Every structure is written in structure tokens, then in C-alpha cells.
Length: 432
Image (cartoon, rainbow, N blue to C red):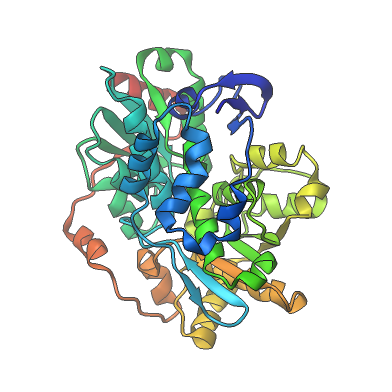
């Protein structure tokens, strides 16, 4: 499989280049040249396949030219080893729980897959890979967990100071060893901007072997397609074509993975893009105009993105046609007051505890179902609510904290504070 840049479709690179270099020199994003539909037998008999078997078949076309079947199987077996169950709240409303991995967030699927894949791609090479990752909350913890102690790979995580939850911060600042954390005085967009500038800086790339674990890296999106298929198979076959996936969205990698799944033959009806007040994509879908903003802080902090990177891929998949995009994606956005009300409503109606990100999605689901009474809507619960204890407490909800989070309480935070200017960041990397 070859990969092109969203800014230059004539560019062709192999998987290793796309994954290890993450970002093309033209500041586009890598996309697969072809996306083939999965075998019809698999799609028609999807319930016969385990999660790992589905994952193997889905990613095979993207990896087969660079890895053997045995190596692909090894990547899958070592990374996709926890469940993604669909919880049935009502006849029409379901919750896809994506937080059963080590860091209790959906980012575990992508981070662990990338760690296993990158390990294969650099095997036998006498060099160190330096991974840069910006996080608005959950990515950092998942990447820290997935790449911890992986040989010949160092990770630098950039996060916005004061804008991630207490336990999210603990997850990404307490491991040490090959995991370093930079506490940036700014927003997630500032962190993401620093990472992108680093990949375009010739001096840095001469000195270091830079790669990214953000969803700018195509290897993050591939495994995020897996659980769309896994959720699909858990719904009664006769209504699968009426499935609507609702994705609480920030950088839009998760939703873009759903678009790739549709290209691979997954026959669902629609995607709902549910955001907080950082609503540049919903506004684009309503008006056809894309106007990035400086991100606002909200209680659904992992979605606080004012200029989502994966919008480039979304445009590419729809040939820059907003009308085509609107035919598949339905937009909703909500403020914090509505999010809090949604958290309470979901608990009262379904006895289900939603984190603040999932609550944004549930509100969108309820609104959508008012006008689409035959739909089956699956909301993505992207993180365990215990990761947002301050928000849960503020709406009067108690949450049992899993032991893996409790153990973080006694660990000491270790981060380097830094301004959001690129020269400081570059100096830090060069001095390493």
C-alpha cells in the first residue's frame, strides 16, 4: 500500500515512511492510495469473527506490503486484547464503551497498535525514534501507557497547562523512563502547532528521527476503524443498515476512522459529529465555510480543539464538497450547561453514567432520534468517567475509581513547564 499527501496526490510513500515520518513535507496528511472493501463473506457474516480476527482482516490491506502475515498477527494480538462492548440502553439508543483498555480511554486502541507497529518497522535498526505527541487529555495517557519501555523509542508529550483533568495529567506525567511531559502555557492547538512545526523543521529532522502518535499519523486512524466493525456486529443483523454512529469529536480522528470504515464496506446510515462550543466543523457543515478558532476551555476538555487536523482528511474523502459531507455527517454542538444536563438526564433515564464527552454525544443522540424514529444510534463513550472526577462531582454524581487510577494518586508529577513559542521547544529537543 502506498500513501499520498492530502496536498499532493501525486506523492507516493510506503507505509514505513508514512508512519515513521508522520507528516509530509508539504504539511498535508498521509492517506492510503486505495481503500478496498472487505471480503463480502466477512461483511455478511461479521458476527462469526472475533474482534482480533476482524482487526486483522481490516488492517491487512494497509500493512501487507511491509509486514508478513505473522507480523501483522503479532501487532494485532499484542494491541487489540481488550473489549469494546455495546451497552443497550433502550431499543434505539446504545453506548459503545471504548474505555476498557489500560488508560481507560479509546485512544488505547490507536496508541497500542502504533507502539506494536512502530516496533516492527524499526526492528534491527540501530537508531532511536523520537515520538512527539500533543494531547488535550486522553491521548497523552494512552500513548504513555502504550509506548512505556518500548525499546529504542522515546516519547515527548505536550499538554496545555491547567486544561487537562487531574488524573489525566497524572497518567502522562508519572511514568518517567522513556516518557517525558512538557506542560505548555497555552491551548491544545498551541501544542499541536508546536508538533507540526517540529516535523517541518529541517534542522530538527536532521538531528532526530521524529514521528508522531497523534491522529495526524495514519497509523492512529487504522486501528480506530476496528471498533466500528466490532460495534456493528453486536447489533441485530436486520437493522444494521439503520445504524447511526455518534462520535464526540475534537480533532476528528475518530470520526475520520468511521469514514474509512464506510469505504471498507461498513453499511451504516450516518455519522453524528457532536462537539462542544469548539464547533468549527459543525459550522462548516451548516454553512460551507471553515473558520478555525482559538480553542475554548470546557468541561469536555479532550474535545477542546479549534483547528482539528483531520479536517484535511475529511475534505479529501469528500473531494472538498461540503454537500457530499453533509450527506453522511450530521452536526450538533453544545455548551457546558447542556452537557451537565445531559449527564444528569442519561443517569436518570437509563441509570447509566456518562463522562462529559459521552454526555455531549448522548445529547446529540436524543436530538437526532426525535426526527429519526427508526434509527439505531450508537454513542461512543470514549473515556471512563472516573478520569473527570471534578466534573462528575459538580453535577452530584459519584463514580467508583478503578484501582489503576487510584494508584496514580501517590505518584509524583514530573513535567517541564514551557512557553508556547517554537524556539523554546526546538531548543529543548536539540538539547536532548
